[in-house]
View 1 (cartoon, rainbow, N blue to C red):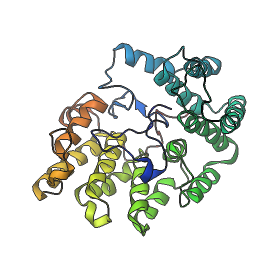
View 2: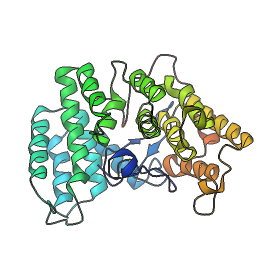
View 3: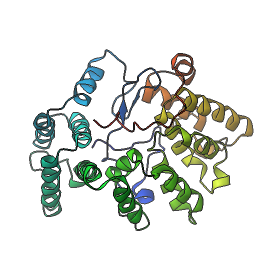
Length: 316
């Protein structure tokens, strides 16, 4: 689905670091309620009431599976918008409809055997642009049939061999069964820099507020976790994705502490003529449409209980 997780201002997830293309993956979009910030990977500063927001709202509220699937079909045939198709497939994954899980499996197999150019009507599109979305549809149906624990065990077993994609990561961030705690413990215990970065990136898919202290610490002190400083953007984006008043305040405070300590002062971390912290600050506007201070002043505090609504809203 869409560019998957393109991280802002030159700090994109690299295929070499994470074994997936930055052109494919699940869509992360949220139109804020009273206690969550707006978040969008597909739209620059998505704002309520705009045509883009209206389209997002219609798709995320849709229960008409054939229409959602047809958006994808139109895109692969070159007659539809690709980002809209990716959003539609994200919604279809949430619906967990058995017939469409079967359709996704069949299309996965077709793509595996299709060769270099699987979509002749849209030659710029590759199989890996669609595969993570299909994977997410299959996995979400498996959750309904087998339960979260089984899906969690499957995904965790494939991470050490790097056999996972953005669809797996998106579903992982939605799981119960202690998924967040499992990934956090693997992040702390990882014995290579590559896998510390991988697990930190996976942590950024969770919306559980209990992740806030760990992500804030990783942002302020990446060296203490053995994380290259440029990957502090993963912790920042994780706090932004959680999106509560508390997580956004934690990001604001962590950014100020990092500034005082000079954590990101190295000029090699600058992009486009701006230093790391300036780019990170601008990413908030790009993703949410408001500065952190605006969100903090307007959002309601989150209830104490753990939030179970993950990426693109709650499952129906």
